[in-house]
Length: 326
Image (cartoon, rainbow, N blue to C red; front, side, top):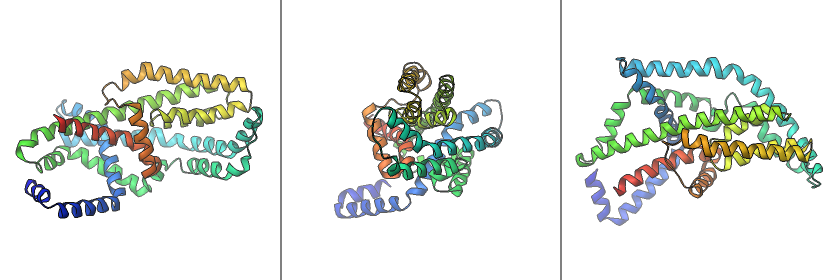
């Protein structure tokens, strides 16, 4: 590989042609790369459990299998049974949201022809509600992709050391130790990010549901689910999730809408000042401006999926960039 890179550095035309072909090839297989990246992220979140079991004198293969079976059991026994209830709640919100928006605009004296945006809002929320069971499949491109992610992540977990050694050995001997360290940093940061985001999303979802229920907001559950889901997108996500709740509150009274807005601000203040430093302290720190730019770029390139994956991808790039500077 070193000789090939040296050859490209001496032949600029060949190097430019190679980069063009490589870029075209990567674009053509972007769906595959996304699936592999998501599988890798899932693997990093489960790796600590495997390490814990191995310390108990359990073989690596059995440790990986037990960890994955526990994950599947959690999905099948806890997640899937409650999805039908979420479906009915989100579908109800989807049907009523255009009317709620119209009533909210009348409350504050703003004329909005909701019939113009009725179709787009109903379509978006309807797709979300009808496909909530397969929401991951919707994002990744289908149920087959979801299954592929699960299978690939399992094999990455099962043969973690072999895959890592295979990639490290592609580098020159003098760079292998450093490359190994970079891999460890990436897996550590991504694992912390995934587990931290799960904790934050769960907290935001539950506390938002409790708050909205106490103040008497309709559709408290789907609104709380939206808040927890959009918590994955930092900075922008919490702002977006508060808008539907404020609109629903406006159908009752402006005072209630102000109270709901204040409640969302308090919840985010608690998260930003207490939870994030504690839960996400091991994750890589990124400038808010950089985060917003990454989300916008990722969303423009790959839609919702790009926005969701922009932060872990930027985390990987940051670790690699810092390693190159050392």
